[in-house]
Amino acid sequence: MEKKYPESKVELTPKIAKNYDKIMNVASLGLYVKFIRKAIKSMGISPDDKILDFGAGTGRNAILMNKYLSDKGEILGLEISEKMIQQFKIKTNNIPNIRVINQSIDKPLNLEEKFDKVFISFVLHGFPHSVRKDIIRSAFNALKDGGEFIILDFNEFILKNTPFYFRIPFKKIECKYAFDFVEKDWKNILHTYGFNGFEEIYFFQKYVRLLKAKKE
Image (cartoon, rainbow, N blue to C red):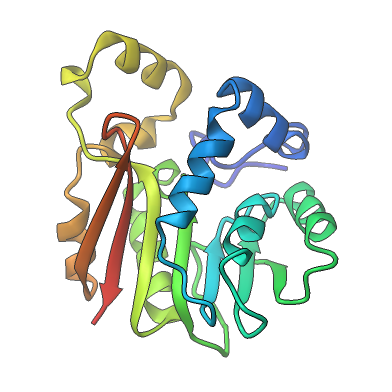
């Protein structure tokens, strides 16, 4: 698959996409599984929530979110990688209130329904800033009034001021788009698009944040 944004690392090759969960588990020495469970618990999911999952991946996050939903709750995943979509469908085959469609999140969404929550996990930082703005607009338009845009991603920090044991791996692993992402004031940016009522939950010595923003 040809990358739409060549310098991004959130657009995965088919080989990496096929083995994504295994790669994340091994690379994190098993820490990622515990972390993502804790992060999703922190979302404050209500039993009847309708959740839109931006960049839904293999369905692991959707399955974890579904544990907090009743039969009336729903999850719709948006994903463009066919390998990811295949895995998503296999994992959620017997879960009727979870589905996935092939849909880019940087384009206007033609969805008939509105959602209580839009969730995006470690995807937003991997785009040019102009594209991030399009994604924020898509999230706002997809939400019900009072709904929440929930961003799980890197927190804000000045990279040159971070300890070398974090700064060096970050520079080697992350794409160039991440470097400006971490130095932006995301609450102020979201506020300009109509979001307020912010809540922040931190992980990994505050280098990672779950940011909740309410559509008001």
